[in-house]
Length: 292
Image 1 (cartoon, helix red, strand yellow):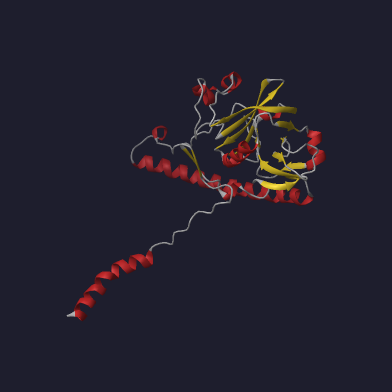
Image 2: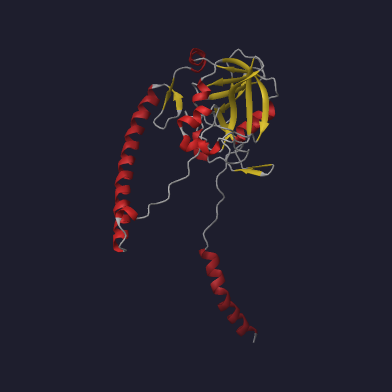
């Protein structure tokens, strides 16, 4: 009797064993230390994808050759880097994205105000030039995950008045290290929280001129992907190769897009739907810029 029961149990267990054997192995997504997901009050900040944290585009401790005193924040819009100067010739370096408004300020100021999950309102000029993007936000946008100022904002003052220069976070991780169409100085949300916690109101901020950047950082160039890298023969040659690869990929994408379009129209034709009424794939959502 016991042998019969054992055989029945073995037969019944086979599907379960097969299911276990065929189940795909689950692997946790790669997370870069310092850029993990963060529960910040009522909001959860997603981890930064490793593809955006390439060499030079993540927070790191570096040797610092500038003359600024410890505790100073130094912004280099040309090299797209921000430094928090430390002791003993060191600094914490943060990668940044730089918008039009970020290029309008040079010299020194102080952090006159700090805000967690700040609200945001586009300027009149932004609404006038791009009403399609900004008119809906004319009344302001409360702080939160969809707010373009991100998790924290530092407001630069000069002579006791708001200079309209902002250092802030962003949920648009892909923009860090690049020039952007609008906004001031953006950091990964994880980085702006780190910086926010380390600098009090009254902290001195120095924004370098192009000559100062060149003297300290050396010549810079944009690579084929719009990222700032040192201008070296190796990077110049790499850019040429990458541009060729990008052009080839663009051609492959164009051919694939045309093929998909023909299939879309053919599918509608089989159903008797005119071309002009044939549904199109839904466009991705647009991420608004920042007011600086």
